Length: 262
Image 1 (cartoon, one colour):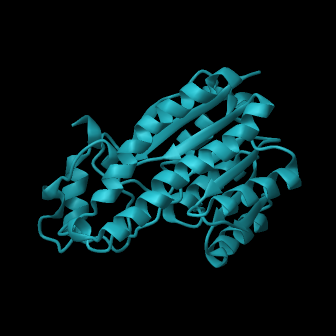
Image 2 (cartoon, rainbow, N blue to C red; image 1 turned 45 degrees about the vertical axis):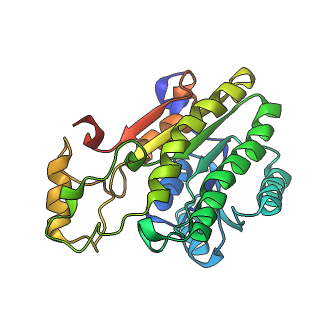
């Protein structure tokens, strides 16, 4: 098998949570372009259906399904529906994230608990449910989408000259940091069954809403001198989903333009 064949996802079945977001759209496109039949899932179907329909218009097999990461029964129903349709799951991308702490450091205990229930407990339940399918197959790849904010603290200078960054949410740093070590734990559990678990920690993704001062400050903080664009995650996702990374597990890979290298 040559390297391009190793990177192919033909015949694979992939699941992406949060498939309609900025990261989710390029993750979905990458998997579908590489040949995987791809299921995207979230609580709100409308935006997912638009993403799936556009992918199908381009000849790719992408389907939208509802699930609630805060509800274990919903997670199991999603898993069972995909297995019923396809008979297998080869790739899971845990990309969904809920933003419930509306007042940053001063958010209520209830808001923080809601974030942990979805973003931490939900991550565990998704990984266990789909990982057990992969264990039975004795193959599979789980990719957790973390953040460079799970690796570092706040860089206040990024927000100089803007109204951003005044009330950062501690839950995001908390669960994205925890995701990295949970990835190592899950890799240890599943490794004997040839199921790999890795984490990708992206840097900031450029948005049209970003103030010029933030773009300038953040870009100066990276080695490559820019924020991420709408294709920068595609390569690493295909690599980790494919046989080209058959000997990589338990890893956290920053895709941040060198932000965490400085």
